[in-house]
Amino acid sequence: MRDNNFKEQSKVVKLLGSGIVADVLLWREIKRTLLCFLILASLFYWFFLCGRTFTSSVAKLLLLVTVTLYGYGNLSSKIRAFAIKRISSSCFEITESTVKNSLRSVSYIWNRGIRHIKLLGKGEDWSKFFKVTVFLYFTKWALSYSLAVFVGIAMVFAFTAFFVYEQYEPVIDGLGEVLFYGIMESKELLRRNLRTLIASFLQN
Image 1 (cartoon, rainbow, N blue to C red):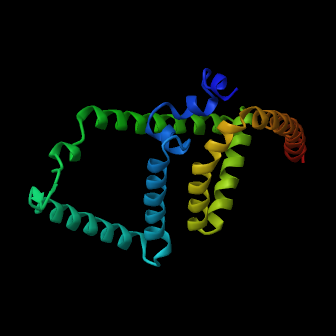
Image 2 (cartoon, rainbow, N blue to C red):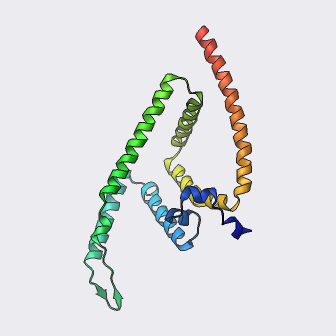
Image 3 (cartoon, rainbow, N blue to C red):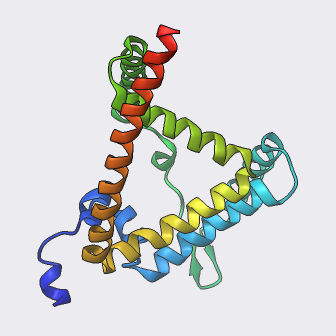
């Protein structure tokens, strides 16, 4: 049954694609996944649990990377029986197309945000108003607690949620439909009550 299910791509595979990100988050290559998790855990400890400021952590990390690269570059091409592979300078270069795509993505996100602000300013789209309100409330709630706790939970969630969803996709989809129906009903009820409250407030 598992082999037959793989003939049709799951939603997680379609979302993550078929590249390195999917291989890591879906635990297809355990060694690579563990390596990525250890690297992220080390960065998490370096930036959030060492007691230093963010600027100091970035400066020390850049210093460590610089010293490591300089020492690696000064190594001889062969130490005893081990050959040292050199890092090509092309690894540190960014192509012009990559820069243009990044700038296009930034401008697209900026223009999309401006369009959302204009729609909110008109006061006609209640659905968008509800989504923005929920997002801002969730952001305020997340930032009110420790940022380190939030980042740690997000990292653990990324390495577990996608894998669990791929294994139990039909069950989770069924629960999601029930939850979505309940949220839509609550949203419609809130929208009606909000309109009534605003109308009564304007009349008074």
